[in-house]
Amino acid sequence: MINKRLLIKNLLAHNDESSFYDKKRQLNLHTKEGKAKFVKHICALSNSNPSNNSYIVVGVEDHDNEISGTDFYDDSRIQNLVNAFLENPPRIQYENVPFPHLPKDKVVGLVTIKPNNKISYFKKNIYTIPGGTIFIRLGSNSTPVEEVPSLNYQNTATVIDIENNSRNSIAHTLEGVLDFLNTRHKDMTSGYKVFKELFIVCWAGNKKVVKGKTYYSRVDIELINEQVKLFYSALDEVSIDYTDDTFSITEYVSLGLNDKTSYYPLEEVSIHFHDNGYYKINSNLLFDPPQYNRKMMYHIYNANLALLHKLEKGTPLSEREKRDMANLPSTFMICYLNGFEDAKQKLIDAKALLKAHEDPAVYVSFKEVMRVLRKMKYA
Image 1 (spheres, rainbow, N blue to C red):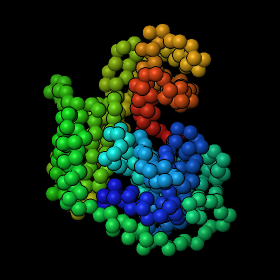
Image 2 (cartoon, one colour):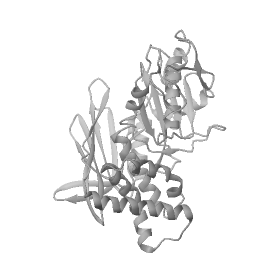
Image 3 (cartoon, rainbow, N blue to C red):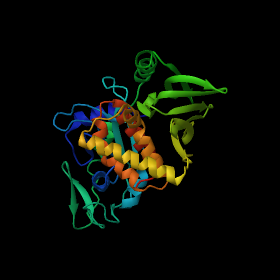
Image 4 (cartoon, rainbow, N blue to C red):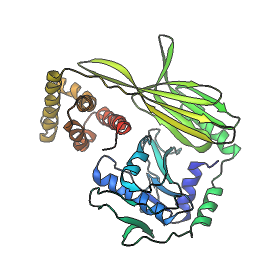
């Protein structure tokens, strides 16, 4: 079993960006340009490594390899993005890896591209990349080529060596459990469960019981053996259930208008542990968004646009408008889910304004809303 934190350290220490690994300060999958760049690198790394894993490390400074971290990213639909634009798409996995020196809301992203043994290429246009384009890695660059390249197997031994040097140990596992329970989450309700005498899942959050059901907010859940953060949310609430073989997380989102909110089940993620040392993660989208009167939604949508206009102009906000700002991301999402197709793009375009707002909770709300929308569909 590979310790993903060790793997990232070994990749960074091994070499600069190469034909089997790339590093990024952050990903921007909100825009067509960002999606195109991400899929381009997946295509190039897959074509350059037909028989071994290749990797993208996210949250690292390019010039000095400093681990600065990035936001927790939910990968449950990211494979759909790759499948939508690549012919012969490789199987990919995005994992969130915590590092001790980072704030608890920051991680290092690790994208693993599984060997494909086929040539991947773009099957349709995206941004400035035309359909039919093939990319390969030349050094640290993802470069388009005119002809289908012959498959190259030169990196296999090197990658196997790096992965073997990143295997987990009992010491790493014990230290990970103690750090999670006693240091990082000592002021929260926390727990752990051992599965198949091998896997250890730890969780922590603010606990409350409603009608006999236990919920957690500000939740952090990690698979300690691999140093992978399975779930993190600053706002939403989850319920946790487990058997001897399965650990399940059901996520709820709070949505509503005019200070009247309800919790809606968003997604259930189940991790099934097997006796042979493997596990499989399945996700099931449960979201049935609330529907509101169309006339009322027009009023709310226009009010949100007026708020953004005031932010752009630097016009002072009233106390009521300041309170409305805290709900602006979620109300834009409700508008979008009620048929206002422009609402999502309006929200994305306002990212810089929301990030610069005096109340940091506004930007936290924006990130949570975008996380929910990502789960639903890649456009």
